[in-house]
Structures are given as structure tokens and as C-alpha cells.
Length: 270
Image (cartoon, rainbow, N blue to C red; front, side):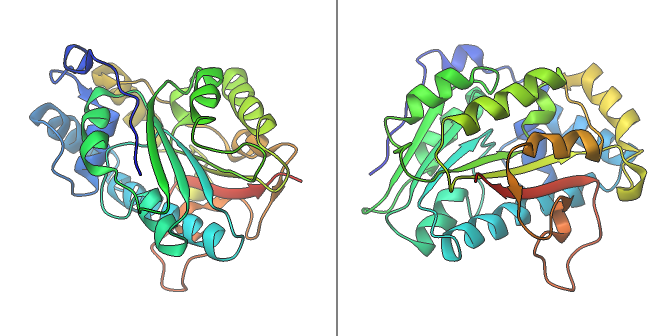
């Protein structure tokens, strides 16, 4: 079973004249769902900060490892994926439903082109459910209300926030969004998060000029944060081993890719 709550004005909202994060990210990981403007901006950013493609791939691989871990080792059967991005190979529902076909997944995004592809690509097993809602991360109340139609908030939920809080420029607002969402899920739920950093220890200094260029030439605006600030998103939760690390190294094989300036972590709600 699969459902989709999508707006009727999708085409009116789609602006192909300005580079958009979901499409540029798709370009960086080798996808085809992007336009010339996305490729042009993506190439310029990559020229300024060559590791950006490795960051994009590492973030995607982190998602796969985290979902498999939660499904196989922690028995999670519900996932709330906020800031889905364009569908590619091995999306959250595909990984989760390979582990357990009865898994229930709700995707959240508000980019019109993501909505278009979600309707056609995000299918489900017969035993499970995949739903898609058009909502903004800045409005957690709307996300929770609509997601409750598919997810049972009396049972553990894995809240996925991969590369999304960096688009919430106000730090206090970003922390409040996390607190609000995690307050609505029961004990035994999880927060899965990645976020770009400018910390030198992960080689993040180059993010700053690249993000300045991005904010002047693309949408939505983005910010990097320190590891200390990113760690605070997990306040009140118990970080699982190996803690908050470069997402390329989280429960990765010994021959994993090099460290990238994108923190990743998984925490459980006590």
C-alpha cells in the first residue's frame, strides 16, 4: 500500500531557473533528475570544495547503514524521513522493507520536483506502507499531524533528519524542531541525523566560502555548524556507538571512504 498527500499547484511552484538543493544533490550523486542550472552551480561548488561529491555519497551510504542497523538490530518498523530529497537507489523504504516487509515509512519534503517523483517512484511492499506528505521542516506540527495517519506514535519511530537542519538557519529554531518531534515519539524511538560542519578536524573550513556562493546563487540557503552545536541536537537522547562522527565513518567497514566534513549520529530516546 502506498499513499501520497501532494498539492495541486506543484507545477506552479516548480522553478527550473534557480538551482535547488534537491536537484544539485541528485547531480552530485550521479542522478539524472536535475537541470542545466543545477549542474552549473553544482560544478562551481565542486570546484570550490571538491570533496562535496564525497560528502553527498557518504551521506547516502550512512542512510543505508543506519536504516539496516535499526531494522535488523533494533527491530524498528516505523520511519519518519524528514527532508527526503529526490528518490534514488535504495531509499529508506526499500532498505527498511527488505529487512521487514511490514515496515511503515513516511517521507516529508516540500520541493515540487521531489513531490512529482515521489508519486511515481516511492512504492511499497504489500505488507507495509509508504506515504509521502508535502510539509516544511519549519512546521513540525503539520508533519506530526499528517504522519500520524500512517505511523503509530505509541510505538517506536526512527526520525530521519539527514542534511535537513542545515536549512534551518536559526539555531534555536532548529533545536526546537528536534525537541518537538522527539517529544511526540515514545521511549525506544531514534533520531538519525547528519549535518555539515566547518570544524577543521573534519576538513570543514572549505564549506564556508562554498556555502556563501550557494546562498547567493541557489536555494534554499544553507549553513554549517560546529560539532558542539550539532551534538546539542541530541540533548536528552542517548547517542549510540560510535557517537557523533564523520558520517562516512559511522559503523563503516575498515576500508570506508575518507573522513568528510559531515557529522552523523544515531541516538535512542530513553
